[in-house]
Image (cartoon, rainbow, N blue to C red; front, side, top):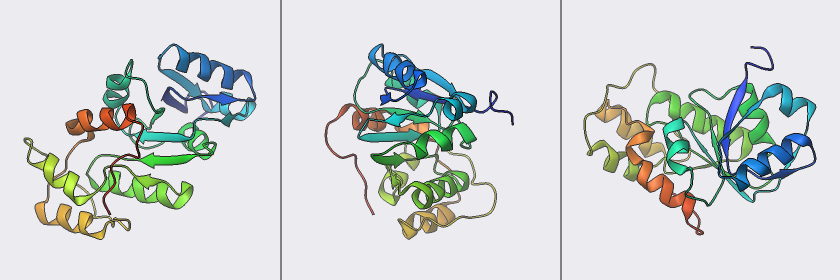
Length: 187
């Protein structure tokens, strides 16, 4: 990937230190999603001033958050790009991370926990079980992964053999973003 093709979608993130930081903060003021490139992140370093940053996998979550206000949201749009990794690494405050309840989502959450000290955001067995019961789910694909923050999650996913996409809990995620309290996390 070149440094223009690698991008990250952001909502509500505030930063200082460069023109890119100014653009991000202006987009946050306007409650407008902003797409930053790896080129911008490399050539215009910034300091993220938002104390808490959430990361989601699906742009439908970010779209639903537009106009809600609250905590900033970074969207990986699937597998995190180099631009996404660079921006998350710049987050000085706490990072709350989630993905789909599938093996890829579990792997990216575990990686974020290792790389950034991220806290899994609603990536627990109780949330999985509740959302699993809300409708049809596709079969889990690929090789199983471990969930070190909640070993019972990977075990339960393997036992059911079903994946649950992040979009199924948009309501709860938006409540977390809009609230002023720490988001729900069950170990």
